[in-house]
Length: 260
Image (cartoon, rainbow, N blue to C red):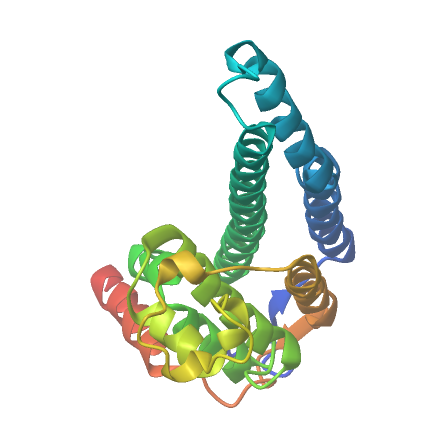
């Protein structure tokens, strides 16, 4: 990236205004807190609700019971299985709700980050090719861009966690594919085994239906987003990073050529 000749040693290419930083963090925390309160809290008494479903089934079918022909144990067993099925359905709904919260917070962070990068870039460059590329760049490209400018380190714990998060979100949205293979290889903790002790990394039978995120993992993703925003430097000057990535330089020069 070419630094303007004037103020060569002091020009700030990126600035994170502190009130804006705090606003981003508060928006995220509100999303997580209210998501737990208004959505996930509804699944806190699943066993009780499953028992009540079995009881309702018995009450609804009491008129069919004939003591001369039916064994009471058979009806109770049927009610038990109704409760089990109800619990399984609630479990699936809870897990899908939790995954939807993960997807929502990741996409919000991703869009806010790209939007902020573009807002800062437009202080020193305006062009459609750079704009389009920032919005379409892969996670790896954005990660490389952040690292090269000194905004965030690729090997930071929070970026590694957010990288795992994007794989989880991709599998949740699109099903089987490259992201599922990445989870098997690098993050099997987000795949639910059918039995304890199963080797998830080599399990060819695993598919997108085995995706699962716990409450603790949700909190870890959330904390990584907060840590990301907190860790961004207040200002990045022209001499802060060694170089911008080749993909960025390519689209930057394309914009410049079209203006010439």
